[in-house]
Amino acid sequence: MHSPSASSSTRPEVLVTGGAGYIGSHVCVELVNAGYRPVVVDNLSNSKREAVRRVARICELEPDFYELDLNDREGLTEVFKKHDFKAVMHFAGLKAVGESSQIPLKYYRENLGGTLTLCEVMAEFSQGNLIFSSSATVYGDPATVPIDERFPTSATNPYGRSKLIIEEILRDLAAAPKEHQNSAWNITLLRYFNPVGAHESGLIGEDPSGIPNNLLPYIAQVAIGKLERLSVFGDDYDTVDGTGVRDYIHVVDLAKGHVAALEALDSTGPGCRAYNLGTGQGYSVLQMVKAFEKASGRDIPYQIAPRRPGDIANCYANADLARQELGWEAQFGLERMMVDAWRWQSQNPDGY
Image (cartoon, rainbow, N blue to C red; front, side, top):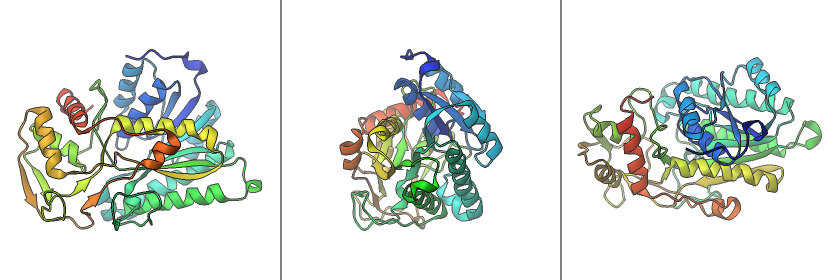
């Protein structure tokens, strides 16, 4: 348990959209640890209210919570009237790559529409400090690795394209003439690689609805017996063992990256900057399976399946810029990611 370092009334408030989700809930914990008070807005379409209650148990400070859709302009305006935010962290949005190709309009409506409404309300209240949850998917299929922030951007699916369009909207906002705006925009785009793991307490973690879209929760559900076996999509890539290689980052490291970005806003001044948040190290699907078997003491049966369209062989970050400018780098290695993921899964077999 962490004792809040300042009384909750004197803590600077940070709006966390999507704060009941996997990454948002871990960011709330790190915000409290760093002396802030998170205020959560979440429509609970893909998250649980219980996550915010668990944050309160970990931190001994309950974030204010509003069950609200970002497209509800009146509701959002009321939240801004009640609070004086130091900054906004924007996580809310739909995030399943495969589903985005099936229902693209819904992805554009939710992800773009929600962001536009949020920015309009922020402008109304002269609030220009924004940290946006972007994704390494904005690099498309990179020509080489590791990927740095100067690489060209593109998208291979509607989810990635929605992130990329939002990045471009935010760059346009930051570049617009100041005389036409209530306040200068100070925006940070954080491009995540593959968040995994869970808080060391085992109280909060990734709780996918239905069949998981991401590798680690799928492996974890096989380990606990909820799913029969893992399908490994492709074993003929040009990688260490033929399976796809990705940069997995512990969700707590990722959350600390957001606090570092928040604290850097004071010194950077207006503009729009992008940073990769990754470890700079790639692991293959089969390396992940073996590491999880070791952490859990369970066998993970798997079968090789055909490659999925849009999947790439190698994807890992060059995270030097975040280290140089934000003073942040990932601390936790693969073993710790697996141990924490297994603790969460074994203590919460059915999620929240």
